[in-house]
Amino acid sequence: MALRMKLSFGCAAILFIAAIVCSGCVQTEGSEEKVLRVALTTGPDTGGSLDPSISWEGWPMRRTGIYETFFFYDENMSLQPELATGYKQLNDTAWEIQLRKNVTFHDGIIMDADAVIYSINRVLDPSNSRSSEYSFIKDVYKTDDYTIVVETNETYAPTILMFTDTIMSIVSPNAENLDTEPVGTGPYKFVSFEPGASIELIKNPDYWGEEPKIDRIVVQYSKDAAARTLLLKSGDVDITRDILQSEYTTLEDDHDINIVSRETLRTYFMYINEGKKPFNDVKVRQALNYAVDRQEIVDTALEGVAGSPAIGIFPDIMPWNANDKIEAYEYNPEKALELFSEAGITQGNDGRLYYNGEPFTIEIQTYTKQAAHQPMAEVIATQFEKIGITTTIKIAETNSISADVVAGNYDLALYSWGVAPVGDPDYFVSSHFLSTGTYASTWLRYYNPQVDEWILEARAETDREKRTELYDMIQEQVQNDAALVCIAYKKEIDGFSSDLKGFEIYPNEYTFITNKMEIA
Image 1 (cartoon, rainbow, N blue to C red):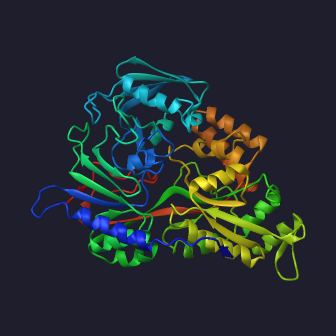
Image 2: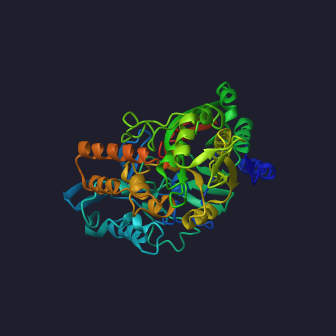
Image 3: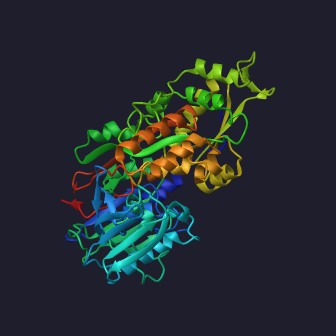
């Protein structure tokens, strides 16, 4: 195995610790101000923009408590009203949404139908890079100041759930520049932002819901899990996400720290370039799946506490998963070699695999925003090497990997996705397995006409039982097609001071700071 790049966070960790410690010095002794100090992995990273309608910036912005949507999922993934109070389906293609009254934006502007239509239209604008995800919407209009109607081009079962996506955060239409100064309706208001470093918030005294219990919040960002964990242990932060896995047991025994672990809706998996030989052969893709020892990856790269072996794309906590019906790819190197041989990839006298007379070589690309990616890639590469696959790893920024993948210049790409952030299977299935889907068409080059037919049928089916049957068949077929190499389901491990109350892990990962949190 050859590792092209080794990343060192030593200097970054020192600077990060210094920044956190200094931020904690702002509160003077005896002050009644309640200050929460937070360490998170990443913040907004699209050119430093804080606009939730840009790419995936809604996720880190939602975590701050600045923005809200019509509906949201609670810690049990139960749909709850937020800026809407309810909805009803008027007919096959029309949905009425009732808006919450007496809500103001952080700039004092009233939230009403005009404001929310403004927010929706920002996402529907063709210039928005994710507008195609909402192409099912034909029109949005108001029937009074607190009622809107969403019309779809055809029956689309997940319509209401799509408005839980953070890209649909409701923003003030009077905001001058949402890139630099976010204005939402949430329990916390924006104060300042240092790209890649920190964001500061104060409580919203005019919040429509229960009054926030924390006065000020300082969030620092660092990809270095060791640095974040050290800050928690030293008491320089009150809470951090994704603590260092190797410290889990030690921190469990620390009476000043609470450790919580919970399975999320995030799946670690590898994209396969099916537009490139020999990966266009289903036997090769199946062989790659059999060559992966998922339990070893969980036990080593995830240190036995930060995940569980994957079967299909949806974690067990996802109600729509078909993991009890589909056949898992158990670790079976002999089966892998047999399938490789049938596909023309044979073992030489030196124990290496050869394809068309040349060593069979695979490059795994990945990025480090998720701390587990690099160690997972290293374990997978070692497993591939054991059966004779010459394997290299390329660590790069996500934009660089995306460019390679879209251009078809890749073999395997290790990624992780929150596979059901809106709680519905269509979100991931359509983008990855429908032949016209963004990732199916340009990343995977995956096409199965039967799967296309089932996906389109499931989208339009409002009967839950019938939809379940369709998604079960879809999951079984893409598993047989080995469209992806599913590896593990992530468990989020967060640590926080015993003085912090009201904190919950939300499986969809984009709710974090809430008005329920308080410092005792």
